[in-house]
Image (cartoon, rainbow, N blue to C red; front, side, top):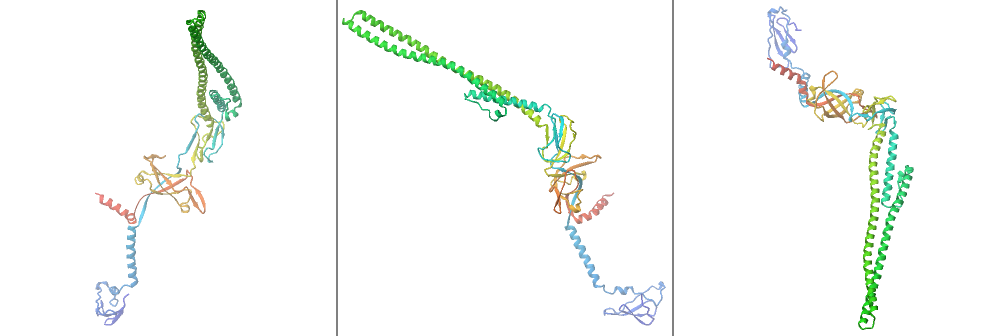
Length: 484
């Protein structure tokens, strides 16, 4: 790589002129091109190297040259990029998340349909997986004697209500009784009650008429006695006037004593008659009052009997209505219906004629209110970083997350204590409320259904990218400085 310079001769290498020193071991540059400040450079080579005296190497000569300008640009750019990266690493934040697996669950509890008394399966109207509406029959039990007992109680209740209406009409002294729509439904009972109304009305009228007749007779006697008393008073006044006039004539001796005595006797008779009529008037007045009391008592007794009968019928009707309601509930419960819109998850009893015991589960319905949650299992070491309303992203295993994306949500509930899975490992139950219940892709909706397996990324905090990258260093330093 070095040019050979003969002894006593001058040479040129990389812009430098050299001259041999005559010793065969070094050369002196005579002049550097473009650098007037350098006159000479001595280059020494070890004599023990065994090199040819005519072969010279000049490594230091290259160091005297300036580096190329492109190299300076590259170095400067690297430093700028490194500084920008460090600043970006300290400014940029990354999210800390906890990964947890679980399932999609309906927001409401799974509805369990049971029968209170049990019975025999008569019809199964749905199948597992069917979508049902609230109130839709699912399973029908065999009616046996339930419906006939209900009908008998309904007839008895209608009869009692009509009897009460009949009693009310009699108490209000109506001319007729009406039973409305119930009378048309149970026409035989209505006809019977109308006959009862007519006969009772006639009986009451006869009984009241008897006492009214007695009262009228007593009142007539009272009025006759009053008239007779007025006549007796008039006669007494006339007899008194005759006696006074004859007594005056007797004193003047114009009348005989006999005529005066006869006039006096007539006056006494008139006075006695008046006294007798006064006593009889008092008696007839009392008799009138007594007849009035008897009439009122008869009327009160009649209405009291009617009221007692009404009370008895009303009490019996209340008991019959209670039994009828109970029996109607039994009849209604023969049709086990869906309590809410949803999907039939399970039919434990699925054969006609099977016996359903009291309280046994007949069907389970998953509510279809389209409100779903993701229920995930979080490890105990991660649960301390999760808080309510924390943001979360949920991916569904059946939908490719790179195609369909993920569902946004937030933490709704965190279990108060831990549970154990089938392997005995503890976990905490966390429910995530989802903002949407379906994926949309190319104008098509893909619903998320209960039971689908999901993976949730729950945000627990954030930290800078630099801290994330330097975490292994921090951890190593903590371990190193804590050793003995």
